[in-house]
Image (tube, rainbow, N blue to C red; front, side, top):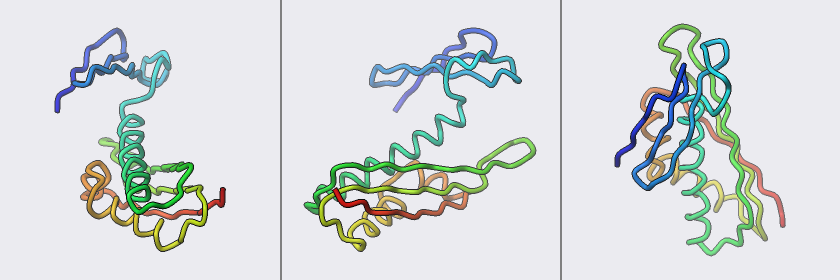
Length: 138
């Protein structure tokens, strides 16, 4: 896997993925940015959320669950001093479907966290990551 980061101006950068997609990242105005895109650390958090949501949906579909929606909100705390690494990430899943079973959703989230989600497993080596979920009947 490869990516290329090109400096645009001030603290704005264009991230280009190997698959041909691009995302503009920018720093906070306080750091000289113009708020033109997400911050790099926000991208890291968004990528982690995307990775685990992908897993949970895929696992539930493979288990023939009638899932119609999955939303995961990640809330992260960061260290106060440099490097301002994540110190805690909490993931809250809202899974919507027909007759979803609590154990089925719980297992999908656990499998993502413990076996499949490369991003959260990597971050989990240095960050406390917690999860909870709710099921909404469709």
